[in-house]
Length: 141
Image 1 (cartoon, helix red, strand yellow):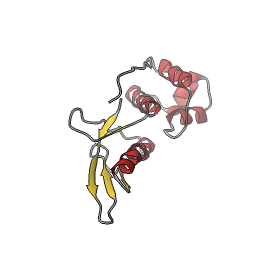
Image 2 (cartoon, helix red, strand yellow):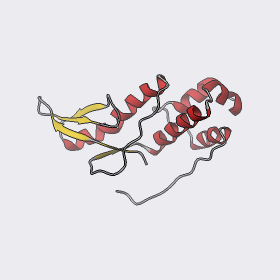
Image 3 (cartoon, one colour):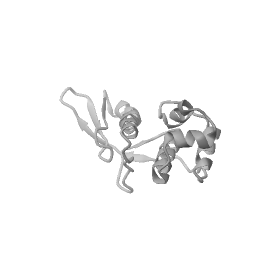
Image 4 (cartoon, helix red, strand yellow):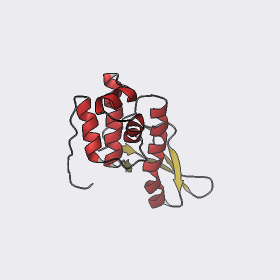
């Protein structure tokens, strides 16, 4: 589970400013603490989409520390893991498409954090990289 520490502070216009220290540039706000925390995962995803477009490494959250935290959806985490595995193996999107016997736009969707990809497609992509996708269930925090 990707849980990023969130820094909350009062903004000059009486809203709550959200900063994610481990993801430079990830900022958002909310009218109150609850709304601010609800917006945090989207702010993180938005910045990570830009990181992926620029072919940059994904910043991982620091372990430990006290909350509050923003937790990314499991599908987002799987897509980020696929992106990271591709970079580690030096496999581009075209090569992955060739290995999956599919068209490049299908691989683009697998890496698109805003697209609701199917789990079986992600499993196939990981297999094409010599990896296996696994799911872990834990008690809610």
